[in-house]
Length: 118
Length: 109
Image (cartoon, rainbow over all chains, first blue to last red):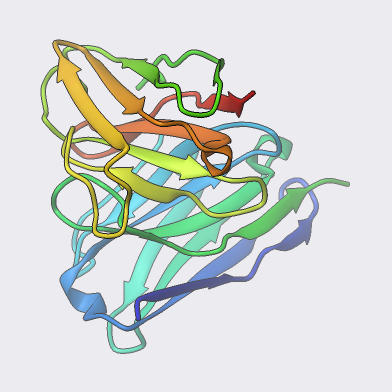
């Protein structure tokens, strides 16, 4: 059974940092591109970042470029999102999602809430 | 990229059919047959309902169907049921990223 389990969310002050993790199981993690998608409270889904299967290629939304870094450890079956210089507008539930090359998300984690507030 | 455009809300009675539109541009919806749709119940993760414009994942009811014409994709739900009440999001591949619609709240009357 495919499982994606996020962790690392919490309350952080503006300007602070957090690292989110997404533990994958039930599939060959190293074969799949992975993405982070976020959802602010009461708002819609927004794409954040993606990484290819071996970690050699990444892409970011303009709103997080230069502040967030996506990475993966295929030996540990884990996806990461390092978030620096956090702002109030980064407050959201962050989901990791598996991305088969057909341009869709077939499995999602349960999400982890990040709250940026003083 | 700008978000895809969806109606904020749609409604229908049990047994009826509804259609949710999703309008993008020639850089996303119009360029790729890679539109997907997601259902999200409150407090839950999104669930894939349609991929590659019109394909249904295993386990998704055939009451759900998708189509695309030009820069606009559509999700049709036939034979509405109470459990279909949820938020629905379209999503398009856009090269090095994806772009979502703003979401549509479906109310089953």
